[in-house]
Length: 123
Image: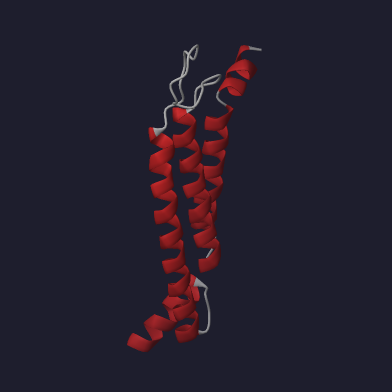
């Protein structure tokens, strides 16, 4: 009963860890470059959830001074995550552009096939 109560209290952390493991597993086990990018985005999302949940206080209010408000939610993690989201989207766009170029060059987006084709060209 205590374990279930603690899991419920920390559900955002648990979901974050599960998402990170899913993304990490996707990146490690798939050769398709698009699936690797999707795994990376799942990992990014899990980190965003983790950091936003650090700043969250159950029952807290927005950090606007009002009478009677005792607890405030920390806005700094949310502000930092906005920057992280912009960087993540930019990196994803860059990675997708590279995948398009690799597909034009090699005719595939499978990492193992691209490595094999590169080794044949340079041999």
